[in-house]
Each structure stands twice: as C-alpha cells, then as structure tokens.
Image 1 (spheres, helix red, strand yellow):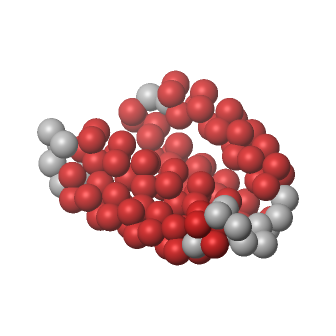
Image 2 (cartoon, one colour):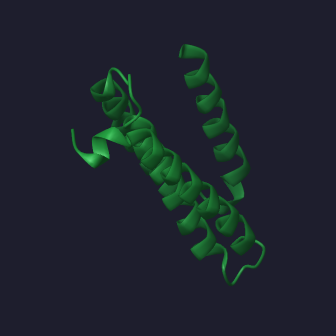
Length: 107
C-alpha cells in the first residue's frame, strides 16, 4: 500500500480543513462590494474541495450516480441562473432553495 492509500482519511480531513478556511475567508471577503466577487470564488473553491474530498471517503458507493446527478443539476441550473433579471433574483433564490430541499427529501 502506498502512503496516500494508508493515510486517505487524514488527507480527507486536511482537505476539509482547507475547505473550511476557504469558506471563512470567502465570507470575510463578501463584506465589501470591492472584494465580493473574489469572496464568492474562494467560497466556491472551498465547496469544490469539500465535495471532491467527500467522494474519496472510504466506503463511498455510487460515485457515478452522484457525478451524473451533479452534472444534471449544474446543466439545469446554469441557464436560469445566467438569464434571470436582477429584479427577479429573490424568486430565483427561492426556487434554488426549494430545489435543494426537494433534493434532500429525495435522499
């Protein structure tokens, strides 16, 4: 066994720590309009790190089903998210939150 395989859980926990730091820094940068875009990017990086780390957890099953579901969700959400007018943004956020709740209920 290689070092990475033997210490996979430790590496996953380090990735979670890095993701948490990204979330904290991202939230801090959201406090100013001048740095809000960078804050969003850093927080998105943190979420990506956390999701990828979760996929490497021991005993993780149906990884292909998870990846296909992520792609379908991303494809279906991209068009409305890019085309919505700023005046309709609260409704868009409500729809996305509702879809997230529906997804959690299905799991």
